[in-house]
Image 1: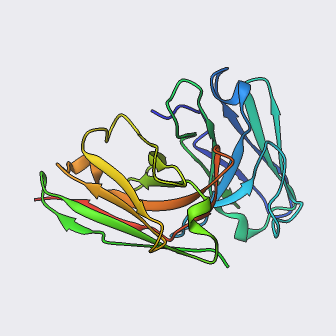
Image 2: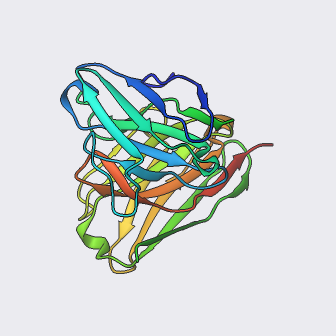
Length: 111
Length: 118
């Protein structure tokens, strides 16, 4: 059971837009920055979005993030087949001594 | 460029021990806290442990507390995870990740697979 809640899967056609939601509580998303990670098949997670809506160098602006209250959203526009991956939201939880909490992951299928 | 390379995974019987290593390069290792995160087959990410940049502080997930020990050797730019009393549910790919501002990992290794089975 993950601390953060994500839909198991989403799908859309190439060129379309998709959003992935991430729900938490006041102890995690509500009072901390949210990050998003992309995990392509058979590879390690890669930081995609940090501090709710910032992109690391090299991440295209097709990827965006937002946060409102205890929920966050990842948006991807102009979908490409290469975007097929698992996407995880993550943050810090104030109830824990230290460490990260994650969502259960969302499998994106580009039809 | 930043590189993190895990090693030490393998097949181990329940109750036995294993030590993982994470060799870091391309950055000043002693400036960063480091984490271990695992992923069971077909499952999501689970945070395991973190060690501060200077090795003075460490914290663990409840699922591994008392069985796993995180450590580091800044002179060798290497992070370790000593895993004792292994259980079937510890089977996973183990990733090391560099900490950024406490709430995210900006660089991850490729992972090493640990399989606990008799």
